[in-house]
Length: 221
Image 1: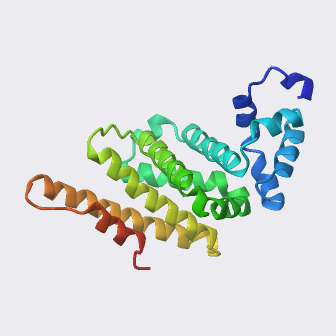
Image 2 (image 1 turned 180 degrees about the vertical axis):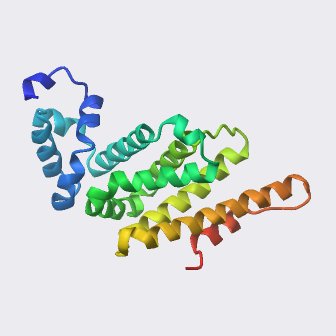
């Protein structure tokens, strides 16, 4: 596609088109204007239009890439395939699929997480984490509208985030350490679901989600 053929694209469409291409360059150039220019050249998109589409800088680039991962994950896991699995297997499949999508861009993801960890980006990082968790739960068929809607996403944010950090440092064969880590974390979630069932029958018992999440954050390895 030539640059002239992209004249009719909106800025949102340009972001969607470049989102999966920028990480290949961000691994070397950082999440920078240079990475956007190189991605635009790859896609045959006008460089000035591309710069305008990502005028808000690195966070906008990372946001677009994470949104692409959400969409690619959903496209790779058909509903009929997910329906045949128990819920915890659906969540596992979603996380593993996200890792598959990000695998060619491990260094770009490492750089992205360093940017997200900056104090000024904390609120945006939390929103992106929530959005990814929501995408996974919706893919898994979750329809909860009560407090479970929020607790499930809070817990999954912790599971997914810690699994990604483990994966970035994993040098084991076939990423066995990451998969074992993920399965342990999902085991914690399963225990939580059992505990919630007990609480439903005993309304006088008080449960602290913050205490539970604190335990999830530092699991025994």
